[in-house]
Every structure is written in C-alpha cells, then in structure tokens.
Image 1 (cartoon, rainbow, N blue to C red):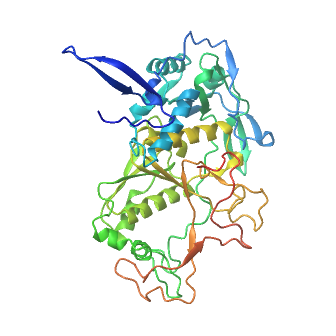
Image 2 (image 1 turned 30 degrees about the vertical axis):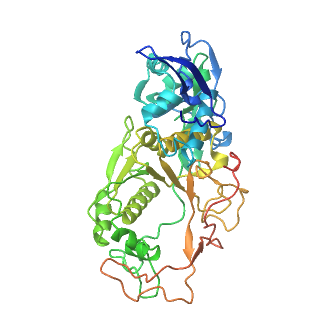
Image 3 (image 1 turned 120 degrees about the vertical axis):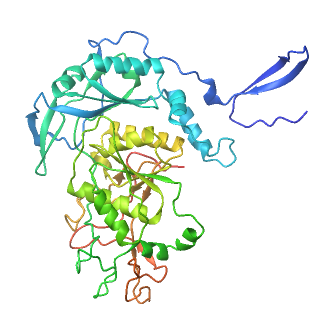
Length: 481
C-alpha cells in the first residue's frame, strides 16, 4: 500500500471501513480541504423589516466637507449604478485568504488553479436565497435592480434621490468643490437590521470619482501636431511603439510568435473614446488593424466624453495595444471607473486588467477601501492580474501635480495603488546624457531608438510643481507578504 502524505495545517477525516459492492472491506481515507467543508448557509432568517434599521458607518466621502455644502439636491434626481456590496462571513474571508496564498504557492496542489465567478460565488458569496431576498427588498423600495453579480457579492440598482433618502434614511446634498458641483450623502445611510450583518457598503451616493493622472499628456510633437516627428529637429525625442520594442528588447519575443495573439486585456474607463482616433494611431505606427471591443456596463448611462478621462482612455488603449499588438483589448466603460472594474472582474473578462485612476488614501472612505480590496482579492482568486498607476505626485499623493512646488498635504500614497493585491506601476525617465541611443531620422513606423537606454525613477518635480512617480507608506494596509 502506498504511503499517504499528510500536509500540516490541513484537516483530514479517516474512514476506517469502506463497504465495497462485492462484499470486500478495505481501509481508506477521504481528504477534505478546509474550504470545502464549509457549506454555504442562508444568513437572512426572518422578514426584512424596514422599521428596524442600523447605521452603516464609513460611507461618507471625506471630500464632502461641511464648508462646501450647498443644501439638499433635487429629490427627483436619478441616481444610477448605486451598489450594495455584500461581505463574506469571517470564516469565508479566512478561507479566501488561505486560498489566495495557496494559489501562489508552487508546492500547493492548487497552485494557479483559478476560480470561475460561479465557483467564487459558491465559496465566498452569499447564498442564492439571500441574494434573491436582497434583490426583492430593493425592488420593494421602488428601485430598479440593474445587475446581480455572478459572484453573488453585490447588486447595482437605480432610483430617485427621494427613494434613496426614504429607503436608507440618508440626506443627499450638493457640494461646491474647486468650482465643480458634486452631490454626496451628508449623513451616514442606514440599513434594515436583517441585512446589516451581510452588507459591506452602499456605493454610488456621491459623484466624487477617482481621477486620471494629472501630469499633462505629451503625445504629440509641438513641431507638427498633425504628424508627430518622433525625433524632432531640435533633438527632442518622442517614443513610438517600435522604440518601446527596441529599448525593452521585445523584438525577439515578437519574432518567436508572442505578440498578444489569443490574449485578452481589459482597460478600465469612465468616458467614451474615439475609435477613429485609435485606428489612426495604429495606422500611423504600422500596427495591425485590431480595434478594441467597447463594453458599456449594464445599467450605466453613456458617460459621454470628458477631457482628462478620454485622454487617459486613449493613452491606455493605444499603448497597451502597441506592445501586445495582436491582443484583444476590451475597454469597459461606465459612469465610474469603480463600476467598470466591478463588472470586468465579475464577468472575468480577461486575465489582465489595467486602470489609471486614483486618489490619495485620505480622501477614500473606509467602505470604499474595503470594497476595493475585496474586489482585488476576487480578481486574484480568478487569476486576474490588476495593474494601476502609482501616482504622479511622489510621496505626496494628496497634493495636486503641477499645482505647487511644495507638498502641503503631508505624506500620502495613491489609492488603489496601495492595495496589496494590486500591482502599482511607477514611471521612469531616461538618463541618456553622453550616450548614442538615437538615430537622427525616423523609420517608416516612427522608430529611432538604437538600444536600451539607461533610466531612473521619474522625478521632474521643481518650480513648476510636483511631477514624480508615486510611492510611500500606506495608512490602510500593513506591508504585504
């Protein structure tokens, strides 16, 4: 009989006798992973009574300060893409964290065995009966439920401000911040007692959205805006896709047949994009005709276009597609980047997700932070690598880039870059003085780089303001493993 190898910190049940149909008796063991021993149970035992409520703390956006308050909003204002985020039980959360560790342990039998959204729902979501009861309760309050997550951990819904105020006993006001009018809840919402143990957060009560990087986009040559001169007459250099391939030695990978074919990548957005502009970029630089797929999140109105958001979306789509040249890029669009991300992860659209939005941790509510990390953990469990920008104000993420040469907001890091399950990517800059790294002319596809160019962390902070790669210590999270 072969030896049975037992691993530490696992639970086993020994079955001493096993009846076999032909009458023989044999000894054997049945092994159960701890997570599989926990049956999902219903957590809503009684009726959902609206009269018995409890306050949900941590749902006020720190940017909604009293000095900016301009009074209640119009009660008829429609709020779209509100999200009721549901939390796992403490035991489910412990099992999820164990799973995440084992999925990254090369010695584990479940190394890189990712979950589908349905498998995630069965192990870490709420029960089917409970999600149905939550949906029915929202509808009984007059809301239109627009999406129920496959992971059974959140629902989106819409309704008028008056309905929101009545159902959640919350005041929603207008705020004037930096010359821009916003809306946000002035008080903490309340939730019926029957639902409180399973509710993580109520999102969508404000429109203080995360922002794209503040550094100016320098994507066109000032010498000829209509046709970029990648190596300009004055010696200024602008990178073309073929320059990236040369500098980072990607050409041999292309020649070996790895050009993104068969791969998918999600770019997160909160603005419409001009597909003709993206097509022109790919044509100008000799890239394959491979337009991105554009998905509007169910229940989201068309967000239209906005300068910084649209520019960032163009940049992300164009440059991810210029490296992974034949990959399928899926641009997920909605009113907010957070809703776009929720949908992309719940649908498990791609194994790589890229986002370029953020805020300093100090203006992120505790519940927003909790939902964002829970979502990142779900993404990792499904095998999704989440990438984000580290910020552009150095270790002073609460200060606005190019606003002041001195940091006044104290040490701060960018969120969600600080989340342990997310890979934050910082910028670099070339230190090419004294070397011969460029051709004097451009190739047909705009390339002019000759080789790898020495580089350092991006830091151009000076008299004009802060402009450097973000980083520092998080106030939310301890150092990850």
